[in-house]
Amino acid sequence: MKSKPKLTETTLKIYTYMVLKRGWIGVRELQRELKISSPGLVSYHLTKLLEAGLVERSQDGKYRAKPGAGAEILKGFIRLGRLIIPRYAFYASFLTTLTCSYIYLLLREGLTPAGLLGIFITLLASAITVYETIRMIHEVGK
Picture 1 (cartoon, rainbow, N blue to C red):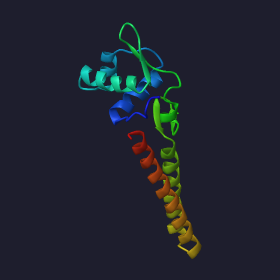
Picture 2: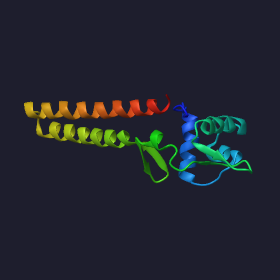
Picture 3: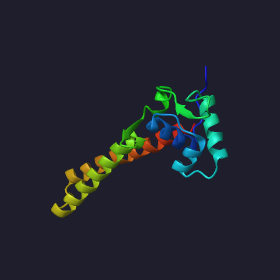
Picture 4: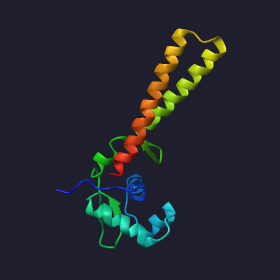
């Protein structure tokens, strides 16, 4: 059984690109598309992904993400077009926008004890979702 791979930022960037591309891709194409400094660096990260069982290599030296192989790694992420972002990032941005709007409206109308409690609750919810987003990003790299 393969151990959980340690995906650095670059390895994750290559893997998510391959998941989105859904086809065979060469080392140099990955290098150009992702603006990585050298083909050797791309090969290094592809080797890590191969050892983790997340990608496969064809006879002609091209690579592709194995279907469903990285479901565990990407389960906390959502796809928005060509982007893959942490699920909590959406919640964090929504709650932070809601909090800012709430504070703005309260400052216009005047603060009350109930309004201060509302500010406290929305700030706490925003802080928790931002913390969980950061924690999720760091978990992928472990």
